[in-house]
Image (cartoon, rainbow, N blue to C red):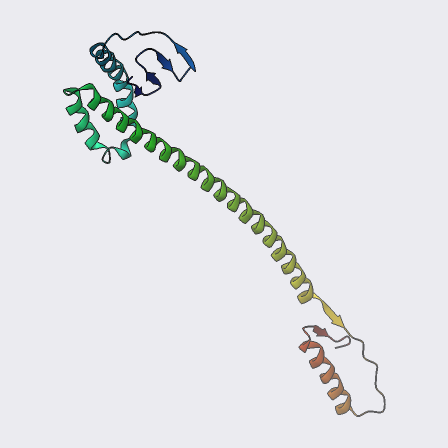
Length: 186
Protein backbone atom coordinates (compact mmCIF):
# COMPACT_ATOMS: atom_id res chain seq x y z
CA UNK A 1 0.00 0.00 0.00
CA UNK A 2 1.55 3.33 -1.00
CA UNK A 3 1.64 6.49 1.10
CA UNK A 4 2.42 10.08 0.23
CA UNK A 5 3.51 12.71 2.68
CA UNK A 6 2.63 16.22 1.55
CA UNK A 7 2.79 19.14 3.94
CA UNK A 8 0.27 18.29 6.70
CA UNK A 9 -1.51 15.44 4.93
CA UNK A 10 -0.81 11.73 4.85
CA UNK A 11 -2.42 9.98 1.93
CA UNK A 12 -3.01 6.28 2.23
CA UNK A 13 -4.66 4.02 -0.32
CA UNK A 14 -7.73 3.72 1.89
CA UNK A 15 -7.93 6.92 3.90
CA UNK A 16 -6.75 10.50 4.12
CA UNK A 17 -5.51 11.67 7.51
CA UNK A 18 -5.12 15.27 8.46
CA UNK A 19 -2.35 15.70 11.03
CA UNK A 20 -3.37 19.28 11.47
CA UNK A 21 -6.66 18.36 13.14
CA UNK A 22 -5.60 14.95 14.43
CA UNK A 23 -8.59 13.40 12.67
CA UNK A 24 -8.77 10.33 10.50
CA UNK A 25 -11.67 10.45 8.09
CA UNK A 26 -12.62 8.25 5.16
CA UNK A 27 -12.66 11.05 2.56
CA UNK A 28 -11.21 9.30 -0.43
CA UNK A 29 -11.47 5.73 -1.65
CA UNK A 30 -8.82 5.06 -4.25
CA UNK A 31 -9.70 2.35 -6.70
CA UNK A 32 -6.48 1.95 -8.65
CA UNK A 33 -2.90 3.18 -8.92
CA UNK A 34 -3.93 5.43 -11.83
CA UNK A 35 -6.59 7.12 -9.70
CA UNK A 36 -4.05 7.35 -6.88
CA UNK A 37 -1.60 9.07 -9.21
CA UNK A 38 -4.20 11.63 -10.28
CA UNK A 39 -5.09 12.34 -6.65
CA UNK A 40 -1.40 12.64 -5.72
CA UNK A 41 -0.89 15.17 -8.50
CA UNK A 42 -3.93 17.16 -7.37
CA UNK A 43 -2.77 17.08 -3.77
CA UNK A 44 0.76 18.14 -4.63
CA UNK A 45 -0.46 20.87 -6.95
CA UNK A 46 -2.60 22.44 -4.21
CA UNK A 47 0.33 22.32 -1.81
CA UNK A 48 2.81 23.52 -4.43
CA UNK A 49 1.52 27.08 -4.21
CA UNK A 50 1.85 26.93 -0.46
CA UNK A 51 5.36 25.50 -0.71
CA UNK A 52 6.34 28.07 -3.30
CA UNK A 53 5.26 30.89 -0.99
CA UNK A 54 7.18 29.37 1.93
CA UNK A 55 10.31 28.81 -0.11
CA UNK A 56 10.23 32.35 -1.47
CA UNK A 57 9.96 33.61 2.10
CA UNK A 58 13.17 31.76 2.88
CA UNK A 59 15.07 33.91 0.35
CA UNK A 60 18.53 33.52 1.94
CA UNK A 61 18.37 29.82 1.25
CA UNK A 62 17.21 30.23 -2.35
CA UNK A 63 20.69 29.71 -3.78
CA UNK A 64 21.19 26.56 -1.76
CA UNK A 65 17.92 25.06 -2.94
CA UNK A 66 17.90 26.36 -6.53
CA UNK A 67 18.55 22.85 -7.81
CA UNK A 68 15.25 21.80 -6.23
CA UNK A 69 13.38 24.13 -8.59
CA UNK A 70 15.05 22.50 -11.58
CA UNK A 71 14.14 19.07 -10.29
CA UNK A 72 10.61 20.28 -9.61
CA UNK A 73 10.26 21.41 -13.24
CA UNK A 74 11.52 18.02 -14.38
CA UNK A 75 9.09 16.30 -12.03
CA UNK A 76 6.10 18.25 -13.31
CA UNK A 77 6.56 16.47 -16.60
CA UNK A 78 7.60 13.14 -15.06
CA UNK A 79 5.93 10.54 -12.95
CA UNK A 80 4.23 10.96 -9.59
CA UNK A 81 6.87 9.05 -7.65
CA UNK A 82 9.56 11.44 -8.82
CA UNK A 83 7.25 14.33 -7.89
CA UNK A 84 6.82 12.86 -4.41
CA UNK A 85 10.59 12.63 -3.97
CA UNK A 86 11.01 16.24 -5.03
CA UNK A 87 8.24 17.33 -2.72
CA UNK A 88 9.83 15.49 0.21
CA UNK A 89 13.20 17.09 -0.55
CA UNK A 90 11.56 20.48 -0.77
CA UNK A 91 9.74 19.94 2.51
CA UNK A 92 12.94 18.81 4.20
CA UNK A 93 14.76 21.86 2.85
CA UNK A 94 11.97 24.14 4.01
CA UNK A 95 11.85 22.58 7.47
CA UNK A 96 15.62 22.90 7.76
CA UNK A 97 15.42 26.55 6.75
CA UNK A 98 12.61 27.19 9.22
CA UNK A 99 14.59 25.52 12.03
CA UNK A 100 17.62 27.66 11.21
CA UNK A 101 15.52 30.80 11.13
CA UNK A 102 13.88 29.88 14.45
CA UNK A 103 17.28 29.13 16.01
CA UNK A 104 18.63 32.39 14.64
CA UNK A 105 15.66 34.28 16.10
CA UNK A 106 16.22 32.61 19.49
CA UNK A 107 19.92 33.46 19.35
CA UNK A 108 19.16 37.08 18.44
CA UNK A 109 16.66 37.35 21.30
CA UNK A 110 19.14 35.83 23.77
CA UNK A 111 21.93 38.13 22.61
CA UNK A 112 19.62 41.15 22.76
CA UNK A 113 18.60 40.27 26.32
CA UNK A 114 22.25 39.80 27.30
CA UNK A 115 23.15 43.15 25.71
CA UNK A 116 20.31 44.93 27.50
CA UNK A 117 21.34 43.34 30.82
CA UNK A 118 24.96 44.39 30.27
CA UNK A 119 23.91 47.95 29.36
CA UNK A 120 21.73 48.11 32.49
CA UNK A 121 24.62 46.85 34.63
CA UNK A 122 26.98 49.39 33.05
CA UNK A 123 24.50 52.20 33.77
CA UNK A 124 24.19 51.08 37.40
CA UNK A 125 27.96 50.89 37.77
CA UNK A 126 28.34 54.30 36.12
CA UNK A 127 25.89 55.82 38.63
CA UNK A 128 27.70 54.16 41.53
CA UNK A 129 31.16 55.28 40.42
CA UNK A 130 29.94 58.80 39.63
CA UNK A 131 28.59 59.06 43.18
CA UNK A 132 31.85 57.68 44.60
CA UNK A 133 33.85 60.17 42.53
CA UNK A 134 31.56 63.03 43.61
CA UNK A 135 31.90 62.04 47.28
CA UNK A 136 35.67 61.76 46.90
CA UNK A 137 35.86 65.13 45.18
CA UNK A 138 33.87 66.76 47.99
CA UNK A 139 36.13 65.14 50.60
CA UNK A 140 39.23 66.30 48.76
CA UNK A 141 37.81 69.82 48.54
CA UNK A 142 37.08 69.76 52.29
CA UNK A 143 40.59 68.60 53.09
CA UNK A 144 42.18 71.14 50.78
CA UNK A 145 40.05 73.98 52.15
CA UNK A 146 40.73 73.11 55.76
CA UNK A 147 43.14 75.44 57.43
CA UNK A 148 44.81 74.52 60.66
CA UNK A 149 45.36 77.43 62.97
CA UNK A 150 47.99 76.76 65.58
CA UNK A 151 48.58 79.14 68.42
CA UNK A 152 52.14 78.69 69.46
CA UNK A 153 53.16 79.67 72.94
CA UNK A 154 55.41 82.63 73.33
CA UNK A 155 58.81 81.37 74.17
CA UNK A 156 60.51 83.66 76.49
CA UNK A 157 64.15 83.31 77.07
CA UNK A 158 64.96 82.09 73.63
CA UNK A 159 66.65 84.05 71.01
CA UNK A 160 64.67 85.28 68.08
CA UNK A 161 66.56 83.07 65.71
CA UNK A 162 65.76 79.99 67.84
CA UNK A 163 62.08 80.80 67.97
CA UNK A 164 61.98 81.47 64.23
CA UNK A 165 63.74 78.19 63.56
CA UNK A 166 61.23 76.33 65.75
CA UNK A 167 58.30 78.03 64.04
CA UNK A 168 59.66 77.30 60.56
CA UNK A 169 60.15 73.63 61.50
CA UNK A 170 56.51 73.38 62.69
CA UNK A 171 55.17 75.05 59.53
CA UNK A 172 57.21 72.79 57.24
CA UNK A 173 56.05 69.70 59.12
CA UNK A 174 52.37 70.66 58.88
CA UNK A 175 52.61 71.64 55.20
CA UNK A 176 54.31 68.34 54.37
CA UNK A 177 51.21 66.61 55.78
CA UNK A 178 48.98 68.59 53.39
CA UNK A 179 47.77 71.33 55.72
CA UNK A 180 47.68 75.01 54.92
CA UNK A 181 49.20 76.83 57.83
CA UNK A 182 48.12 80.31 58.86
CA UNK A 183 49.75 81.77 61.90
CA UNK A 184 47.71 84.18 64.02
CA UNK A 185 49.28 87.45 64.74
CA UNK A 186 51.18 87.76 61.51
